[in-house]
Amino acid sequence: MKTFENNFPSFFLLIGLFTLVAWQPGCQDSSSVLSVDKSSQSQLEKLYPNTPAGERVKAHMHASMGNGEDAEARYQESLTKLRSEPGAAGALYETYRKVPAENYMLRTMLTEGLKELRSPGALAYLHNIAREKIPADLHPKNAEIDTRTDEVVIRITAVEGIAMLAADRSINAATILMELTGHEDLTVRQMAVRGYLNSPLGNVEENMQVLRRRLPQKEHWYITAKTTDIKQVQHPKMPADFKLESKNRSTPPQIKKP
Image (cartoon, rainbow, N blue to C red):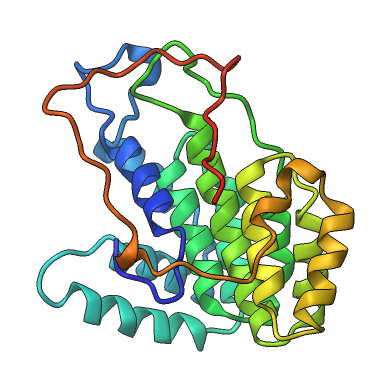
């Protein structure tokens, strides 16, 4: 995947995509193997609308998966064409709705496409994706797969796109971000708060007060307009050997407070 500008949760996206491509036959039980043979790829090709916009979206998805020294240049060229294509937002969302739920990579890429349009015409579609209910993990006993995390990646990618439009002074986008601060998922709430506070609309301190009234006291720690330079964050030391722990939804991971 390419390096996208303004993509602050990129590590979540990469983790989600890595989880997907790591599913290989022989490594998992048959219920958790994602088939990417030619026949399934052919079926995916049929999901794109048979329109100029649909063809442009399909070409952009191919460019997004490119590799080689000129991959980034080809991706940016494709993105420019996608942005100038009338109906691109609608074609992206129409395809998204047709893609099988378990194809997390393509669903994420289509959402990324909507985000990178940076168009008011994509706002309603991004909103629909961001507020979708997140289904439970399909493989709760498999420590190597977490489909709920893959779903969260899709939601926060959509929130990023909404935040970009809010940063461009879209009142509608800012209103949607405020709505999403009530989302069921903590990560989505955090991303919505970040996007809302980074919007140039309104007074930051007043906006923070509104959010403090809206969110429970225990979550006030992430209501801040301050940003952290990732280069200044100390990297954790990885052990020489480690094993994957089995999942336990009764003890969810805790986010360290600043």
